[in-house]
Length: 196
Image (cartoon, rainbow, N blue to C red; front, top):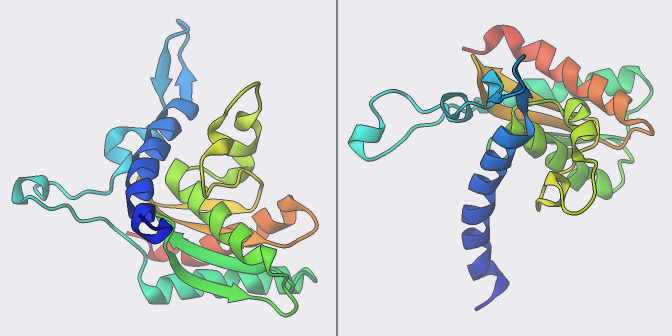
């Protein structure tokens, strides 16, 4: 069996695993010490499934329009260019990590393409900004950072409709991940008013 034939099966296993790990990693503790899951990662929030779809045998998921994804990418790159960081790549991805829009700045190195996509996917899948998630991947032995296709470095922001994560904006290539994060946040700020 070739890698291309095995890849969809691997993704079918990996994506639900990421959702499960997201619920675990983003949990919180109440006053009694009991663990509870944050609102951003409850099963209802993890899926933007519309009520009644499951009874039809199908589900529908919210996703950004091409115009909105393009606008977010343009705004993020514009912020980086204004900050003298035009050599970055910006990726806007859906919850599954599929690229909806990508802009590669002038002289952006090849590694920035995958870094931007992976940061966007990580933010979308976990429903949290990668700058917030970065501190949660430390520890001995395997961690969620070992999940394929994820990157727990600052530079990815989650795009939400209500409490449901529907997309991610990732930026890669700045010398400091916090600069990547600021550019991605600018992309989100540009489209925030149009998200419903």
